[in-house]
Length: 298
Image (cartoon, rainbow, N blue to C red; front, side, top):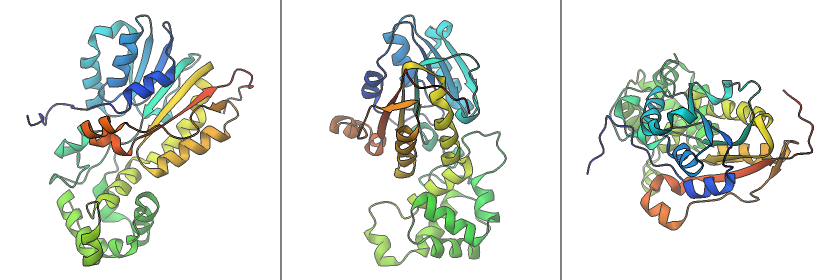
């Protein structure tokens, strides 16, 4: 059956591993920093009849989908729209914090969001659609040097300079198809054919990261979030590429409030990978708030 393009269809990854690692408490209070379609929060609320969840997302379509999915638990969940890096819980402290990073399958499957080269659509890529900056703005106004730096640092694209030069020569580019074609045509033909990924994959990843400032907001969130945990509370973060995973790993190790729980990241089982291709690149890391550390509020 073909997915309904108007529905927010999303399968949460590493659900069993994430919930198991949280070590749920029956009367616990949890922060789902990227609620998406509500899959992870649904499990928490179903397994613990007295638990409460604060659910965040900057995507209003995701929040609407989560409200619908979790309506039977409406007395135990609160929703907040915005980026997790700007959330402030006040005096509230959590037994667990979870974040599933990156673009969801539901966002990729909506052509009008402009995240994917699989659909011809305007270059958008905004997680928060009230934000001014779009992917089209970046592609059509940034300098050749800035574009090359974005593709290299955020997409680890080895042909970043060649691609940026070609983009600047072909501007303006307005659609995902326009950009994908220009990227593909800028690569050496033989090497392009040998690529396992679509030629535009790394450029689209890099552009999405730049538009939404994903690495900067992750850095800010992961610095402040441990102060929101109760002693013994856990934070679990699922990342989808090496840049995110590196930030999570380093900050978990360096934060004096945290003790690393997962020495190596948890990855999806072969069974899950077969059923959900998005899980293939997912990595889950946990850390626990140590009870003896003095909390230094940033």
